[in-house]
Length: 395
Image (cartoon, rainbow, N blue to C red; front, side, top):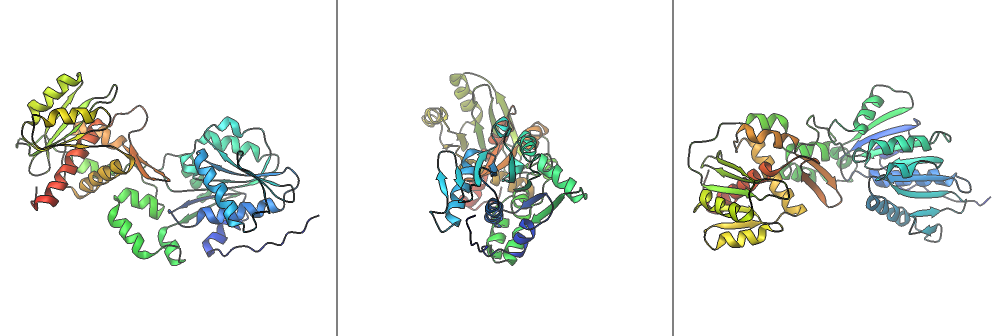
């Protein structure tokens, strides 16, 4: 038998507590950048060291790209590049003992059935389908292998949260862990200054889930259900001072939102017409006031057409980062009570959600829902905030 000398990398106390837990299943809700991925790579590598020929341990992530990131990090954490036999196409590492570490996607849960797995890390489990957990659980049955689930908090409607509740309730063979950004700062992984800056930069709900590992009641809604209700007000009778316009996509609606000098909705139109009629409607309603219009895709041509006859027309292209900026501005205004809107906006505001990805925070309506009113309101609010900053006036 080949002898392997191994020295565990330096870990924080909370990292050691999790990976050395005796319980078969651990559920860890953790802040971003607390070292949960690095420590669980260590754990899975240690599990692979005692495996025999063709015995596999798995790293499972919601999508292929995330599994690939962990695969490359595992290779990087082992200094001796000749230690593994590497299969790049299958994201597979084979040890000198014959044991296998494989990195898999949970996108198609049926693909996880069939094998016997001796240990597993389920990364970003709160973002994966519950059916993937069912499949993974079946692969651990014959081996009685351990599984460690890690991820950010993501509301109280996902299966990982429910499993965490089970562990907190004393379910045998389960143990729950929670790591906040302040735990990581105390351990020297994050700086307190960075955490406080994030607290100032992000909406309350996003900060609580992403940095404090506190699942929100409204399931990752960036605005906060309690704040949404507090800002409901009838349509104002004052004149509009600016507009936000979200243009229709496929079967969606074009929504025009006008705000008065106090930041209250005073004009609201929801229309579904051809582009020629839509342009005429915008001209008639918005007249000479400043307008911020969604210029994504076909919207760019519509903005150019409107600019020929209307002053103060500006386009706003939706990308991941630009939509994040737009929605976080709206969330901050809603939470501060700086913007008011009628009951018609509430359903879309309450169903709107955010998800985390490697590129940032993604904001959108759930599949099958509309977000036209939210986007229109966010555009109007963004214009309002820029007007305050640019002209030093208070609306």
